[in-house]
Image (cartoon, rainbow, N blue to C red; front, side, top):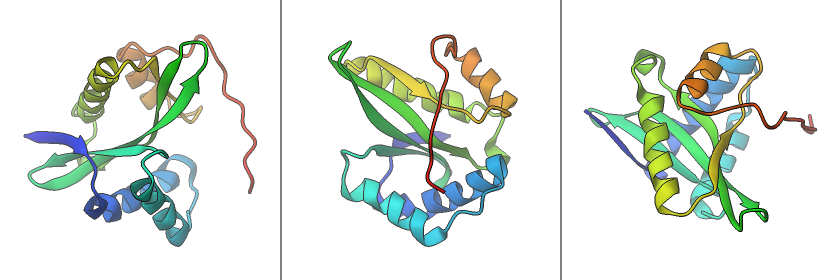
Length: 149
């Protein structure tokens, strides 16, 4: 049985570990653990930055994601962004993300959230297919960025 819940501070070590692994798996980037630790803890100390959710299986955290907020003046309400999504390899392809997505979507509907968004690495076709199967679309916008190195 899995449980999806808001993360608490004692989940931070798992979330930090997941972020380090995800960066390496998806982009072969070795993140600085101290910086990631400070970044994850910053969310727990200031919920205006976002909210982590985790999935537990048999008392062990096996997945996490971060929801951040974008104000939409067009809609006069927030859009929630999925970020930092990670599922432990042994639990992939078992519908864990689908369950997380549906849980967050239900919360969004209950809280008058305009919609859900996420970005995905351009070569991650498996993730893109998963998002499309959930009814998400990439038809409206392309994503551009400038990131400090």
